[in-house]
Image (cartoon, rainbow over all chains, first blue to last red; front, side):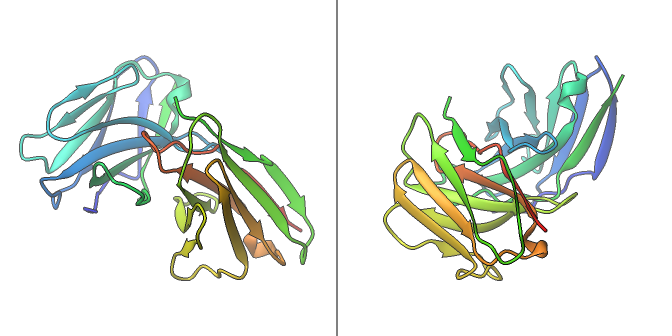
Length: 112
Length: 112
């Protein structure tokens, strides 16, 4: 799986959009970008994934650059409950029985 | 969506005793489950891959005789920490090989 680079931490004001970047310059053509988050003392939660087109669901939007070397997860209206560590993971899909490998992620703090 | 449960959610045990953690897929069958552990302020580290009806595959550095994994059915995998020591105190999380890679809520183990 391609390596990803994320900022260690970010702050965001409540109600504002949170934009979390991820660099994955060595991504292969058949690798997808996945985002998970982990709220303190809970298991990780799937957010969204994409290949090359921008994706949106009820939780977030995923913007992938045209060269696919980086992406941004957007939480449109961050709330205090969005405070968590966000993980960007690049991997082949479908991935069969291979595990997700987590990097250090970005610790997002949403501030009132 | 697919739900994974873990039991117990937290446990305190004395040094030298063994502790069993259960991971169940509630509304789907999982031929493969993954076990992670997470130390404070660190990311999830993959410990082993558990396959139904066969031996688990352990990551380098994880003692298979200390962390016994059993995947006897398509809905249950167990992790037994044998002869636990304080350094085994950690947050243990399981995940299932299924759409969205659902994760359990985690089990916090404290060895005194």
